[in-house]
Image 1 (tube, rainbow, N blue to C red):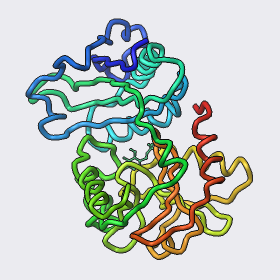
Image 2 (cartoon, rainbow, N blue to C red):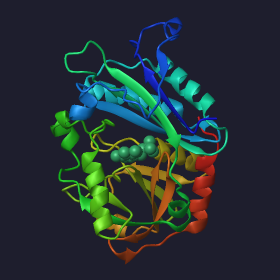
Image 3 (spheres, helix red, strand yellow):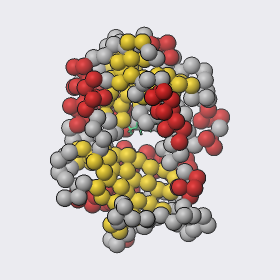
Length: 295
Ligand code: PLP
C-alpha cells in the first residue's frame, strides 16, 4: 500500500448532483509537477486548506473540517465547495492508505490560475510526523505578540482572520522565533493582552476543575480538536468555558495544552522560560480519546 496519496480534483459547484462526482479525481505522483506557474495559491497564498488526521484508516472529524472549509471559502469569497465531492475524495484517499498508523491528509482549494476559469483543488496525504515526544513529555512554549487586538476581525474583515488560508508564512516565522528562544512552539497574544492560539494549534487551559479556551471571536481559528475535546469533557461531566483569557490567567493556570488535528494534545511544560505544571496522566487520557475513531 502506498504511504502517500495525491489527488488532483476538478472542483464542482456546491449544487452539482452526486452523479457529477465520477471522473473528477485524478491520481498524481507527488514527485511530479502538478500546478501551473500562474497558480494564485503559490503566487499569493490565495486559497484555503484543511489538515485532517487519519488514524488507523479512519479520517477524524471530517464533517467539522469540511464545515470549516466552507466557512473559510465564505470569508475569502471563494466559490462554495461541494462538500459531498470533498468527502468522496477523502474516502478515496483513505481507502488507499495503510490501515495502520497516523497520516496527515491535507485538502486545498485555491483561487486557481490568474484569470483562470475555475479554482484549483487537490488532496495530499502523507505519513504524520512522529508526535510521541510532544504528546508524552510535553512542549516548551513562548508567548509572542500577534500585532493586533482581539477585535481585529470585526474592524478589518479583509485580514481574513478566522479563515484557514494558505498564507502561513507568518505562522511559520513564529515557530522559527520560538526555536530561537529555545522553545518548541508559540502562543500568540493579542496586542491588548489576550491569549489567542498557537501558530498551528488551539490553546486549552485548566483552571481548577474548569477547562477554558479563548472564545473564537473572528480573530481565532475555530479548532476542530479543541471542539471535539470539549464535547468529550462535557459528556464526561466536566465544566468547560469559552471566553476571553487574559495572558496573566494563562501564567497562573493549573495546566495548559496546545491541541491540533495531527499532533493532538501537547501539554505545556515551560512557558516563557519558566517551569509550567504538566499533567502527564491527563494528557495521556486526552490523547487516548483523540486517537479513538471520531466523526
Ligand atoms: N489555530 C490555527 C492557527 C491552526 O493553524 C490550527 C490547525 O492547524 C488550529 C488552530 C487547530 O485546528 P485543528 O484542531 O482543527 O487542527
